[in-house]
Structure formats: structure tokens, C-alpha cells
Image 1 (cartoon, rainbow, N blue to C red):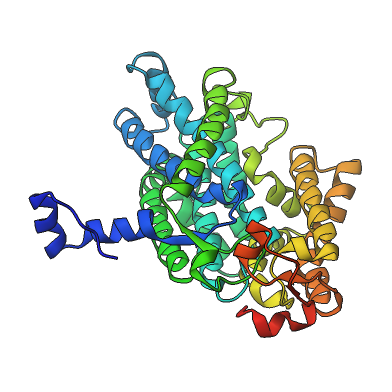
Image 2 (image 1 turned 180 degrees about the vertical axis):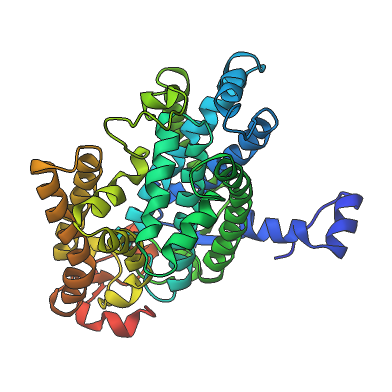
Length: 418
């Protein structure tokens, strides 16, 4: 169905550049599985938070000075002297945390419902690239206030690349723009922090194009078989997404107005001092699980490899999981291991904030072993040996309760395209 409008200007533009037809198809009439639950709202929430981050970041950049002698003071100037500067800065700083909360929930939803399985492998892989760019953007943004934790976090993290044989030291020198974390480093990080969100925006666009090509998965993990299985995006999912963002916005507003510094580190309100090392250097909370993996390995190079492998393993997950059933709702053994894995990730985040010694180091090593075992051993073996429950024959039947007809797990490969 093409877009129809009585406005002459809109019709003239759309005839030459079908932007309104494209938007109508993508956000109004595009069919989605009728059984999507609230776990499927985090993609929309992420899009809105990304726009908030870009808008607040552009305004903050108008008042920020990327110089080691002036950066900390310019942030204080924004907080104290710029009209509503405190609100912009708290929205931007806490918006990063909200972004990662939503993206981690989005990823775990994908893991639970098998959103990475064929034919949606490329959607998943673009999502993993988005995660990597997000992490790089957030790290560089954390350096910009030029507080104690900013400076020492940049020093520690960039030094990790020196563990790479042959090319490690040149990479560190290039990142620093010299032979120490200094003004050139801050300028580079500011430039990249400003640029990368627009790269993210482009990747999100590709993510959505790929999603609309193969449409969304659903909690049952079965394919759309008839028009009765779907409903248009508007008004059904716009209303649901609106409610989801309203609830998420309440959480966002709570941190902005009542606990704006709760998710940050107090040492970052101390100006950077290269002669005074903080007692305990930690990154932002959303990096802590990967920081725990890094520190759990005694060798520096192997620790760096393990940290990057923790994300890289997500790229190959669609080929590691050989089960023909997507959703954990019909995979009882996988569901159990999924929740164990989620608990392990929380444990990694907890021990990542603790000193790398004693019992914390032991727990970090055990959790790291399980993290990789989940993807490389447990998931592939479950694909071979697990006995899934019978699947409903259609989405519409499951939603309307139209009967008990079900396909056996043995017949699932012939019924599904996955």
C-alpha cells in the first residue's frame, strides 16, 4: 500500500523523493508479529536515547574546551554558568548509562529468544558492531571531563594495546598523539567522541533496514505463516512503545534529578593529576564485566585477547548454536543455562569493581571460564542433545488460543526456515 496524502507539497516531494512513503511503510503499515511482548521495546528505546545523546552532546560541545588546562574548568562552567547546563550534562552523562542498560537488556532478549538465528544473522552482527562503537564512544566521552578517573582510566586502557606484539607500541603512540596521555590525546578523543555517534546513527539505520527485510522474531520463535500472524506497527506497537519509554523515562528522570552522580565515580570530580594515582582505578559500570575478564588473566596480552574475545564470540554465535528451535520458551535446558549465564555476567560486573586480589580474583576467573564455556561448549552441545518442547503451529493460534495443534520438535526443522 502506497502513502496517500491530500497535501500538495507532500505529494510533490514524495513523487520525487519517496521519503514519506518509506516512513509510512516502516513506521505505520509494516507488519510485525502480533505476539511481541514488552521485552521487544528496547530497540525503540535505544533509538530515542541515541537522539537524546546526539542533541545534548552537540550543545555541550559548544561550551566544552578540549585542552588539558581548561577541560575540567569548562565542565564546571557548563554546570554552573550555562543556562540549564547542569541538566544537559546530567542528561548526557546518565544517558550513557541508560543507553547501556537498554542495550544489554536488548542483547539478553536476543539471546533468550534466539534473535541471532537464521535468517537474521546479519541483523545480529550489525548489532554487535553497534555495541563495539558504543563502547568506544563511551570510553572517549568518559575521558573528556579530565578528572582523576578520566586521566588514569585513559592511561590504563590505552596502555593495554602495548601488549600486542610488534604493532602495540606504535598503536599506543598514535592513540596518545605523543609519548604520554596529554593534550593531543584529549583532542583526539574529543574529535572521535563527537564523530562516532553519527557513525552509530548510520549503523542503526542499517540495522533497521536489515530488520525490516526479515521482520522481527517473536517470543515463540516461529515464522510468520499468514497475515493473521501479524498486525501493523501503528497504532498497536507505537502505543506499547510509548508506554515502555514512559516507564524507562521515569527511571532516566530519577537519576537525572535525584541521583545524578550515583552511576559515576567521585574521583572524577578531582582535577586530573598525573603525579597522584588513585587507590583503585575502575572504568564506568558498563565496562566492569569486560574489565573483570581482562584482570582475571595473569598474562597482559592474553588478558587483552580474552577481553576482546568476550565480544568477538558474539559474532559467531549464530553458527555455534545448532538448535533448530529459536525461543528459550521451548528449550528448558537452554533456559536454565541462560539464567546461569545472566547471573555470571552480573557477578563479573560486581568483581570488576573490586580489587583484583583474593577471593574476588578467584571468582572473576571462575566466572570468565564459565562465560566462554557457555558460548563455546554449552550452547553447541545443547543444540545436539537438547529435547525441545513442541511448538505451536502458528502465532495467531497461540495468541487466540485456537487449539492444541502443535508440531513436534523433531518436525520443527521442516516447518521453520531457521
